[in-house]
Length: 234
Image (cartoon, rainbow, N blue to C red; front, top):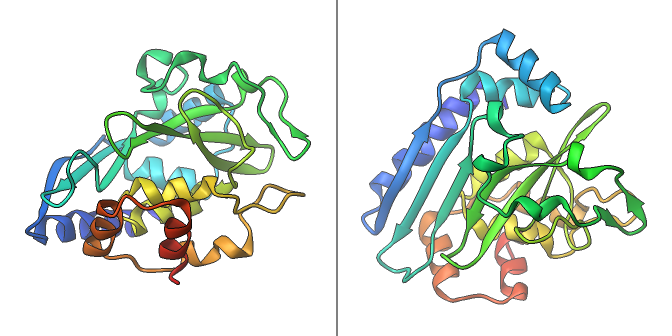
């Protein structure tokens, strides 16, 4: 996605939420965008490759916050995106997860990532309810930037799949920030040899979801099988 598309999709997402009579938007805020100089400095500080998707995002905003619920959801969030400024991503004081989240081995299917404290960075914090916080992590690569999702007390790829940063943003916008869409990344949708999201997951990245459909799913307190079926469009 380029910067113009991000603006368009953000505005459309917020407008659609505002137009739904059952939705209450608690927050919908964008941080100011970064300058080119700040982008280069921040990418160097964080050890990130400044990919086209990351550059487009930082030209759109340096962090954003969206949270919404519905009269039909008691104690649950319909959507939440909580990305702080990239300038402070290395500062545990800005993390909404426990600072010890990176003390656990970062590994899965025999693939190990050395020195995770210097490479894996929490950057998006979201929750289904007040008791269940989950975190999206940036996983820098020599030639790109990946994202994986895990619970806040661990940083483990055992049950998650990798998306590119651009694919992650697309999923978040496509699903109105629904936590269950990102939770679906932890349901075994990866190729064991590469940890990339598998073809089985591709439907989740292509489907168009409705606000009412998401509310109905969350209100049903679904089990993993129902989450699979909903986000695969079955």
